[in-house]
Amino acid sequence: MMDDRTSERHVLISTLIAANPALVRSLLVLTTVAAIVLAASLAARGRRGRLGAAFLSLAGVVVVLALTLSPVGWTSPQQRSCNVEPYNFFSDTANVALFLLPAIFLVVATRSTALVAVLGPLGSATIEGVQYAFPDLGRRCDVDDLLANSAGAIAGAIIGGIILLSVRLVERYSARGERSHTPGPDVRVPEYR
Image (cartoon, rainbow, N blue to C red; front, side, top):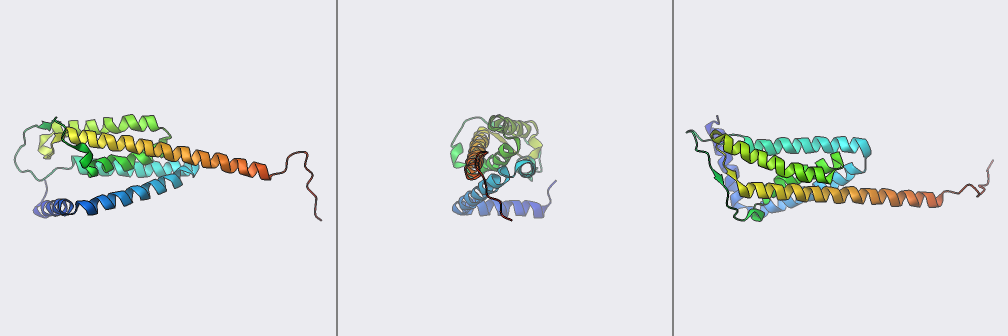
């Protein structure tokens, strides 16, 4: 159960977000750019980078679960309800970004774009199902959330795939460049004594 202070903070944060949509979008863009740079850096670091990406993806999933399944301050039992009519899920930038960042890092960790593109929408559907099954959380399942989260996960999978491809190409061309500068077997290198 939430106390009055927690409920007040939730209302203040919601009010801040509603009053400053341009600021929120700007912060989300900056966060996404930083995540892409970090994911590219991790992708180039081999096994250690994959472990770091796995940790960041797991941290992102924990944040997603906390934001979507933590109880909201309702005091009376709630009826099960679910909005099944899509409205405009692309305008829901926060829900798109919610799954975008963990998806980018999960692709770097698993090296599988397809797996993440499937797991993201399944994870979102599971969250919406839990919100429907447990109305006392004070959450309401919504098809717009499902679509926005799925779009974010698929976009994150695509971005992660592009990062992996870019890193592979850089590694391949840098390896070719190194080989062209090393002498072949028939080239004599003078010895200096």
